[in-house]
Amino acid sequence: MGLIARRRDALERLAGELPGPSAVYAIDVRDADATRAAARHFTGRHGCPDLVIASAGVSAGTLTEEPGDIAVFDEVLGVNVLGMVRTFQPFVDCMRAAGRGRLAGIASVAGYRGLPGAAAYSASKAAVIAYLESLRVELRGTGITVSTICPGYVATPMTEGNPYPMPFMLSADEAARRIARVIARGRSFAVIPWQMAIVARVLRAMPDRLYDRLLAGAPRKPRRS
Image (cartoon, rainbow, N blue to C red):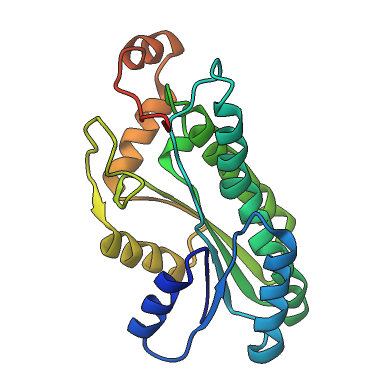
């Protein structure tokens, strides 16, 4: 198993908890050269992977009128969208040659509609959903399958500062188990937990005037100080 994240200490702790050997790569997925180098190193020693999961993501409150938030928009979109592209890109050719493989991308129910105060995050996850759909169709017939997974709220440092209710929240371990089941079943699209799928469909079907009225005064994710 190959593990990629920015913090080597956290990766090595995780590797020590997993059964079997793991290869650790402490890189930032915004660095295309480092991501490709890690992919070359892994495939050179272990062959083409059966599965690549792109789950790197960051979030922060953003306001368009704040000049300082432009850098936050750039970071969120760079990690959440282009980081996924950079994660998948080095493995497509070898999967195509093998005639098999699965690419699984972690999107979010936040990509269903724009959330006030979280424009960068909502935009990034909407882009991820569309990107993965495009990729799925592009790779049809190659033996490579694509899964889009949209979690609701998961108890992680990313959500612990949110100043609003987070219904149907899952622990990180439970979310991981459910994501693994979705991938194992070969599903092309899934929302977890299932209750959030209902919430997401309701929000998507809601008329704009009603959505705007309901969300205008909602609490917002804090901006970075």
